[in-house]
Image 1 (cartoon, rainbow, N blue to C red):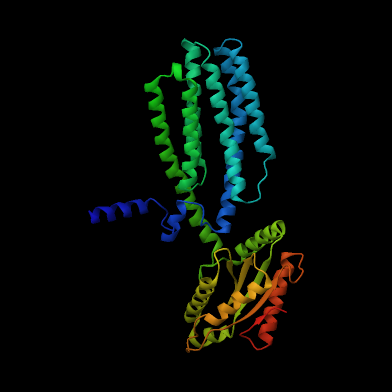
Image 2 (tube, rainbow, N blue to C red):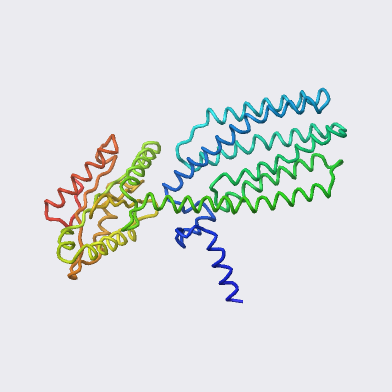
Length: 383
């Protein structure tokens, strides 16, 4: 039994990108442990695809009104046309006026609006059609309205979603199908309804796999783009983006934001005396020691060479100093000769230093780091 379970696990793992780390696979299930940059880029991608979906529906929805005019009697086609005009305006409003700020809450709201519009249209049109006894061509056209939930469920495959997110949207669409069936209870064709419901569930399963596959590839590509190859922490370009995001959040929430420049002391001597391979190992060790002392909300950036930037949101100067003193007490590892690897640290905080621009905060932390070096190294400089 165990060999079979191991074979099944390996086969399922092979369906995911090889670049995806084992610990990242759990992030395909829920969105709660995604990094700031992954969430930010995912939100932008989702909202962009919502707009694409909205444009497609805004153009196609009124065109089907011509078919309604040919197939349905008056006043049914006029009622459906009125519904279509409202839906078309709603889609164009979503396309033109919805604005996002790189937050997953914006993406969730955009998806909710996108799927709510056709879902309400589906329920309303189903209710209207139920009041008419249609035969031949009108009955065939009316049957086409029943395919809308399938289009929406398949459309989920456009979005990089976790399993939990996909399930929540799928449950809403299945609930809409159930509501439409309930509203037409007296005339419901049960075999056809159950078959359609089962097909919707199957499509939901396929789109769930497609959504997670998209997310897996996105995470793998983003990690390669935003991470430093040597240490695995954020690269400088990513750090600049994170700093801007955290600065905007700090302004919006009127919260503290601290930065710490961490420069490893006499690091050039390690490379000169022991070689760059040993120096690289020391860099990886130091970055790991810093990450072990960080909170999940903090971000560590390799700024260049042996210099790191630690971004600490919701952290005032007192708490930042306390955190850095704990890091200093634990240490950053050892040099190849067995002595402690130390660092000169400059720290600045938005409120404490009355800073108005993120670049000024960055420059001040950098200046204080150089003061720490000039004062003898292996110290924290906050003034």
